[in-house]
Amino acid sequence: MMRISEPMGNHTVLIVNGPNLNLLGTRQPEVYGRETLADIESLCRAHGAALGLSVDFVQSNHEGVLIDHIHGARGRCAGLIVNAGAYTHTSIALLDALLSVDLPVVEVHLSNIHRRDEFRHHSFIAKAARGMICGFGGHGYRLALDALVNIIGET
Image (cartoon, rainbow, N blue to C red; front, side, top):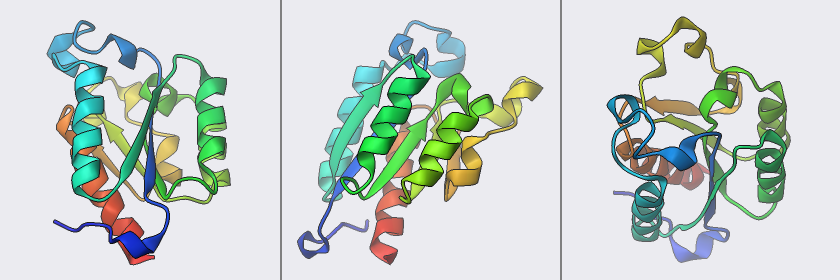
């Protein structure tokens, strides 16, 4: 497992979660599983620490709030992990925000968006992301952290 070494500088990763993810564990558990967002946040903080990363973890049901968090990452964070929820398929504004901060982005989804409704197959976020991880539930965030630490290590 790669780990960020101390001399590299900024080790903060922002994890952004979009609408309805605050209902994880109770909302459609057959699709999204029984893990809560708090469970996923704990997993991310622990795994991030093991990788030498500090994790900022946010969730909002409001597009503008998510954009403000993304803008705030510029110059402060080494990279972003984004689960934009339904905004994945609708928000050009989130795409523009991600492109504007000039940071590596990994897109993550709990479910496999390509096995779901056809309108969920398209991701606006994908254009800003180095890669996408989907279909592995909360474990996908761990995989996204692993991917991001490798991307950060390349620079």
